[in-house]
Image (cartoon, one colour):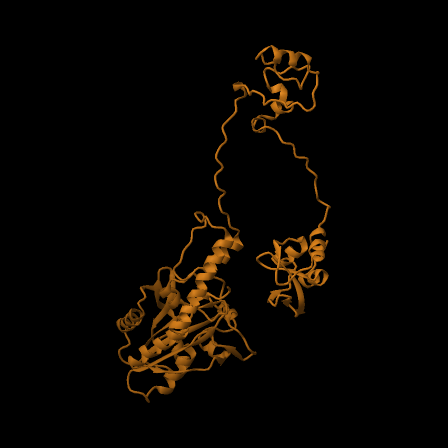
Length: 443
């Protein structure tokens, strides 16, 4: 049978079961495409998703509640009607029989006829009890007793030691187990640098989720009271201040660029990398890197600005990245370059060193190569690439009208934040509605 949606269940019953199990009468229910806005008779108003499988829908469908809301004053007849409308389809009647505790723990073959388990029992008279020789009066009573007395209590049988009863084993507390969905939820609620061992965790999912939600709310309030600065925006301002102080000129190039620029960068239609570019039209695309803008400005400022020409840019880029905890399709890049004199590998390494030391990020340099620039110097933090640095000239310079030596590097800001604050995934550092400064906002 198809499950009814939440609005259908509310319309049918006129009732609502809150998260704490209280039964309310519904005063008004407004429905949108996905959500319900429900107003109770007690004045409480909530907004919930109109789902068929939510906790609220299950509670209404199964008629489960703890107690009625006092302020709603739910009529007794409504409560009785709501409670009685349960399905008898799968009900099973069970007869409960009280037996002595010794028989309860005995093997099944020994308790089918409880009296036979006693060594003194008479098989011919199952209800007769062993005779007790305490005096003549007692003997007389036993002799005149009828063969069967329904009201007579059957004495607890003496259990033979040969029954091999084992002592009750102490039941160990059940290990807390989490589904993968629950694990993902808990991991999303952990703060930067926090860790958890699901194998050792004794709290239930609800207890753990509630504890983390409370802590994350405190973290967000603390951020609001202290700084009110988004860490990605703050890093952009820090980088700008650093490079301006180093004598670099800040530029801002267009985000929407001709696809011809990508062909000049060696990423034409015939290249696999071109599949990662967001095309806006046949001739235009969203920039996947800042290098085209820097090339254009280097050519325009050559022979205008004093030697060496120093430029940098911080801005958004877009690329169809593969899934992973270090990739984003919308990300922020820093590109800096220097053209003319002092453009050696050592000069480039000194610039990288000064920059990353100012951010207090550990790194190492590794030789590598790429399709666009050829030989590169990769800047690594543990197993994550922070940057690819290049010592020019390179063959593509001719397509941009550049004929002087140059050095440059490109850094992903979200990766810098991930390295600096030990974030679990790159989404916590990017432009997101799910996280603020690495803290979950889905509370």
